[in-house]
Image: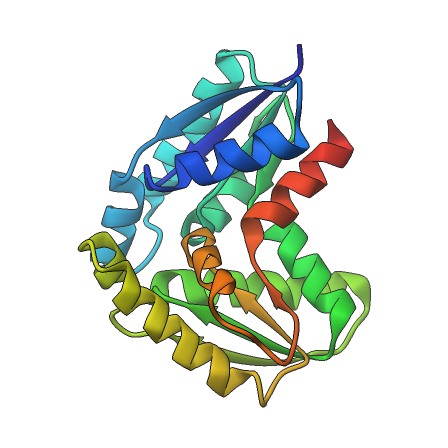
Length: 214
């Protein structure tokens, strides 16, 4: 049986990816490793520190040792650590926002990136820029942070989170050809917010990408 290891920085994402895996990856066994201190330390320090990056690499190694044939890291804030760990790992490793960045670059020149954490905004924006360069496409990037949204979600007020993201989506919708939601936790908002332009979220696109690979 094929095996997929998933590394999360929030337990709230486990059921989200479990549902997607059940739908798109039938017959693939999954392992979940959750360490929310990775994102808490990154937020507290305002950056991805070398110590946290080493722990990300260690967790990826643990999933490989557990038998995973592919590994998905579901947090965009630690994407740089994921890329650094890839050449040290004997199985394919995917950062969750890479397929989303590729889709955004293919869909339009004016790309909006929205995050609820400043520590996620720049890693995702940087990834979009690099994927555009690799594809030979010129883009115009607009970025925005939904202040207070992440804290509201973690504090048990998902409606306040959704309202903040919805307002930002509405504003950027007039300025972009496509909008990228930088964090997997933001995908929940799409069920209630219409948008005049395509809005991309990472969970489904990542799992669809893995379905092709697996």
